Length: 139
Image 1 (cartoon, helix red, strand yellow):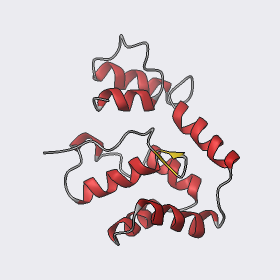
Image 2 (cartoon, rainbow, N blue to C red):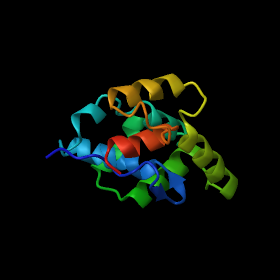
Image 3 (cartoon, one colour):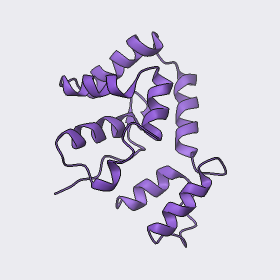
């Protein structure tokens, strides 16, 4: 049976989304990721996350394939990409940005299309992509 990844709100070292990206990679590698989620692997939020951490998505996939834990992969990203530890402001900036995508920005139109496709066009409580993902995946 195909699965959905963990919520984008799940955190790793206080960072939203990182566990979801890693979980998507693992589920895809095991051929368990829900089909409609396979098309954007490495793009969208995955690309935002990798860019923020200063690493390539393909390199993150290699770390996952080596069997590293989420903590080990994030540590590798910080040492390899950013070459420094994240501070409280770094974390706050990331979390505020990524959790608000879709709310009055360049993704708002895409969010409205996704809501309509999923039958959520009357859901005024869904104003960000994170909220949409949770609703679409039954959370």
